[in-house]
Image (cartoon, rainbow, N blue to C red; front, top):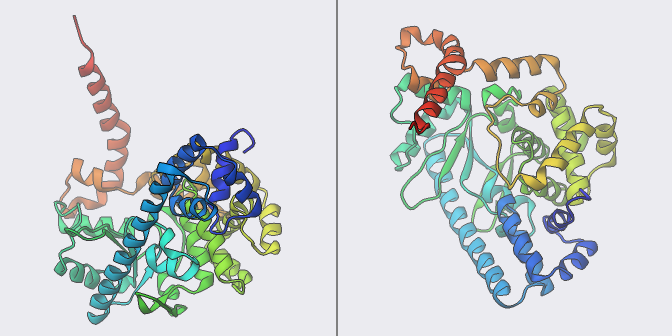
Length: 393
C-alpha cells in the first residue's frame, strides 16, 4: 500500500472510530485531498464515516464543511426512512406466518455501529426461511413490489430463484428490497444452512425498529466474511463492518464462529476477513484468528491480491457468476472448488433463458445449451457486431 499514500488516508477514515494517527493525517489533509477522499469514500461506501470524522475534527471548512453536513443529514434521513420501511415489511411478513429477519442494511447497522446512521445502504435485505420463499414473495407482490424478470415463464423464474438465492424487488417511492433464502448464489458453493441460522437467531431491540430477531454474533461475522469474499472485497465498507462487529461484541465466541465456518467450507473466508480487517482498518481481532490466518499458506497471497486491487477498484463489485482465481483459491476444500467451477460454468442463467426459451420438457438441456451459447453463439455475435461497426469506403 505504500505506493498509494492517498489510499492509506482513506483506510484510516474508514474506521468507525478514528485512531490518533488517523486524526493527525486527516487534520493535515488539504482541500484537494479532501475532495479526493470524498469521491473515493462515496465509491467505497464509507463517506458517512469520513464526513463524521471531518466534522468532528473541524477538518473541513467552507463549501466542504457545508457538503459534509448536508451528507450527514441525508444519511440520518435515509436511515430513519429505512428503519420505518423495514419495520413495516417485517410486520407484514410475520403476520403472514413468514419466518424473516433483517440482514445487512439498517438492521445490521443498529446492532454493530455506535452511529448506525453513518452506514449507508442501497436496499433492505431480508433473510427468509427457504420453505417460506413463495409465501414471502406473494406477500411482497401484494404490497406492490415487482422484480425485473416478470417476463420470464414461471418455471424459469423458479430456476432463477433456485440458483440466485435472492431477488431484488421495487415499489414506487420505496427503498428496493432484497429477499434472500440463501446467503450466496448456488454457484458460489458456500454451504451455509439458513434454517440453522434461524435456529440460532437472537432477539435485539433498536430505537425506531423495536424488538427484532437477528443473526447471532458469530453468524453475523460468518455471513459478513462470506459476503466479502463473494464480492472479492472490492468495497472498503465491508471491512469496516468486520471491524464494527468485533468492536460491538468483544465477547463474540471467535472459536465457535471458526468452527461453523469450517463446517460449511468457509474457514479460509473467515480468516481472510479477520486478517484484512486488522491490516487495513485496524480492527481489534482475536490474535489466535490472526495466527491461524497467517498459518494458512493461501491467505498471504489473497491478502496481497486485495491490497493491490482495492485502491483501483472504485468500489465496483465483481460479477459473482464469473469464474475467478480469487474465488477458486478462497475456499480450502478441493471438492468445493470443483463444484464452484462446474456450477459457475454450467448453470444456465437469465441471459440463456432469454436467448433460448426452451419448453419445460427440454429444460434439462440448458447446461449443454449454455456451453453452446457461451462458446459459439455469443462470440460469433460479438464478431458480427464488430464487423458491422467497420466503416467501409
